[in-house]
Length: 95
Image 1 (tube, rainbow, N blue to C red):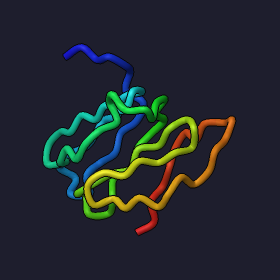
Image 2: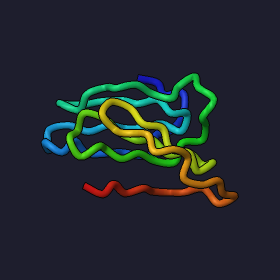
Image 3: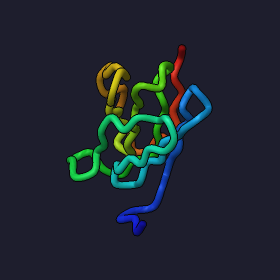
Image 4: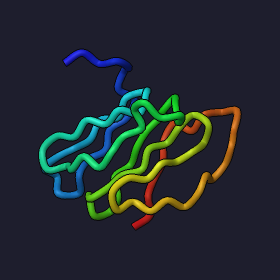
């Protein structure tokens, strides 16, 4: 498979039997039992910096260099936490 952009993040499914990869342009690639719940590929949110799985594994959050967070599946959207000139490089989810 040829990628349009490099992979910038990964999240493990809570089951331990799957994972997601996220590309710089917001494309999501799901493997094993990690379900595909959507992506940002082709959307206005760009320069993805990472991702995190929801506690159930039925969704995920994607972070952008602008400090925005997009939610998919059962991951709840809680708004844009901040805007920054320094891109966030990682995120964590509280159970």
